[in-house]
Image (cartoon, rainbow, N blue to C red):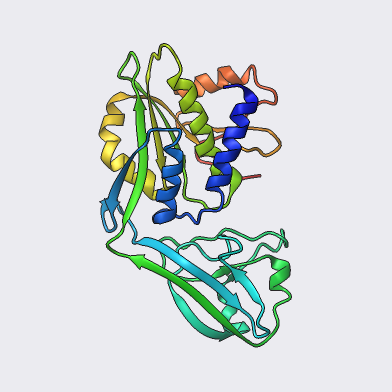
Length: 294
């Protein structure tokens, strides 16, 4: 596939994935996996809510149909139909009328980016809320507001993930994983799944593969833990290297690499070698430093 064709294909997939209301569980995540299955033959697996994975527990499945914050003037100040960032992800259902003071603790903004809508989650603590640009927040009139969120937290739900394997000459594996739970965010995370789709096509086309390549698409944190609880022993026995594909859109055309804990694993040495030919060079981050988007 030439560059222009690949770019067109990736832009098409991006446009399909972008508007979906995703979370760590729920129909949006499953729909997104189905879209990726057009390019990667992912086997989709399910784990019931309430399942213990190490010292964590798979949360209830979250589903949402509608969310609106209507002001005393009849103006809608936050609307899930306009942007799926408008509601705190994993909000519990609510249908209340509140004063602006009562509502305030349920409103989230980014004062240093007054035109941006923040992405806020509450996966593991019951809460609800709305996200809106700070300049909109500052213009909210006094009076009674109607907070309405039509959502469900299903204790009988499930968490899903997708994975597939390209066999190589050796049973030794390279694991490539990515996250797919954030809605309508390009760098974190659609860059990861789309790069994975491109990598899968490239590696599948190789005439010879020294290693076996495993691809995993999971929800962040709880999905990784769930995957390790199922396949951790196999990976301990066979894994030679791994990469998490995330935040691959920059900033400023610069890729960052977070080192392993020991900093001299095979993958560290591979990336150091590749970096000699990179322009601009990678940003290297230590294992214990958060990968903030800066």
